[in-house]
Image (cartoon, rainbow, N blue to C red; front, side, top):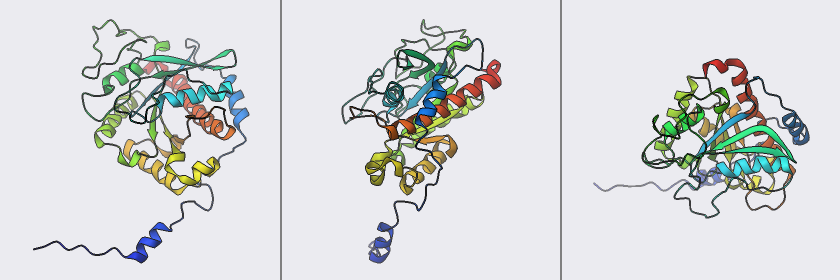
Length: 298
């Protein structure tokens, strides 16, 4: 018997296409004038533990999501100019991770080095033997992986390797994991990659390590936002993507922050900066709370 397909109802299709892409009011309260206050609070930040001098933050994410660009964007927001200390891949196609070596990036404000260090790692890929291994990410969080380690896609770092730190101290460890996920492709993310994120989340949640999602490329996912970044919390599509991301990975909505990274700009912008700084402020607060509440259990 042949298969028959009904013709789509044109009226319903038109109604769907005409659904508002913007909400009547922002779904999240956000003050666009808090940039300088956020900067000052972070510049005057003090550690909650006497034996730790820096808040270390591990940044993980799918290839091309904007991990290194987010690090550069945070640095740019503090410097007041576009910086590019963490190298990024400028090509349109991202078949392999540009980051191959574990490296730490401190954040500066003018000539002052702030007590924050980002750890940038190889991008995640869906295949088992591709991209950074889940064990390497977990070990890097716990301080077992030394800076300069070159990631091996086929095998995670072993305890008898010279780049393995058998007895990490508190200062070697990371106190927050940041997942960087692109808003324009989150609905197409391979389930195998999501499974990797879930494995990591389950393992580190046992130790109470907080996780934050930075959702990049929100301007590419929602045309009204591309024209006016201040519509970011009125964009229905971005809210739905954040909800989807929360459901897939398991991170609550109040730990997901939409941002626009600096990409082709040559000057910084206050609206871009304030979104970046708000996300970073939450990351730092989460990490410092973990350090003060249960450092002995790390």
